[in-house]
Length: 149
Image (cartoon, rainbow, N blue to C red; front, side, top):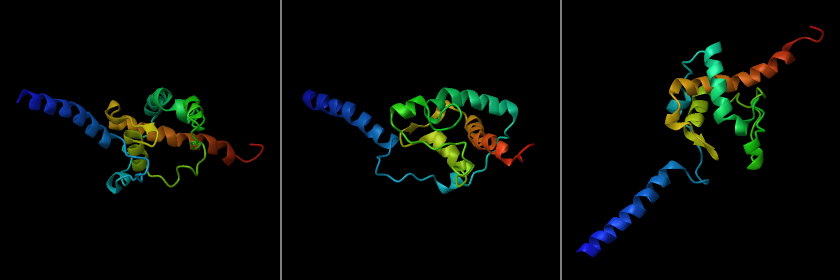
């Protein structure tokens, strides 16, 4: 009887961690989809100077290593991992993405990108969405000016 109990305990120790890991990271073959109810969400956080300043700090700690300090997609870690990331300064890059989709990607992660998960409050993630969108606005502003202005 003790042998059976020890065997069951050993299986439990091996089986539980293995099954927990299965749900946490989808296989590369799984198509990435944002749930429609989340994609439709609108950003409740206004892009105030204070919110953007806080998001800039978070971005600097958590995102810039891959996405680049200025959102160009050329961070050191991305280069080391040979990742081809988009340039957030290009207004067309995120044009087809809703704020809800960006929120979901930041919170849950996508591909090689880990998500913020429970480390960040929802309002902080919404502020990151605003901050990421601000890269394209910074780049678009000089192009909008007429020559000689």
